Length: 120
Image (cartoon, rainbow, N blue to C red):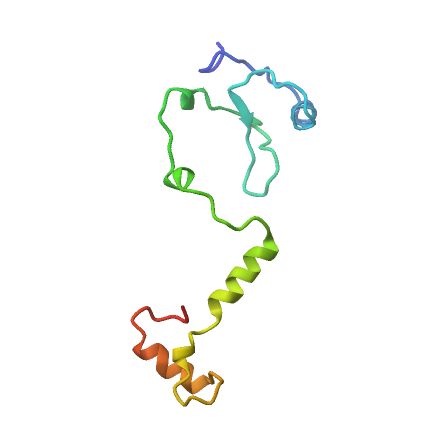
């Protein structure tokens, strides 16, 4: 009997599973739209169960809170690195001895009294 979802994959040799998976990955049509490739923890396609049936997700209301949030304003890795670097720059109020530079002692003492506990 076919598994839940109505699609059946005949038991064939592992090489045939790999070639079917490679054809699907190359843009070919899968045999069933509810079956997706199943990978192991090493990133290889599973040897015994190369495809998983995900038809039950069509009836469920799957919403993750991260999917519903607005996307961040960072569009590239260089923008992300710049934003992180700007976030590490301490505030001018951390310069306790008013010499124009924030040294290790200024940073340590200022962080002890900062309510947020960080540079920004």
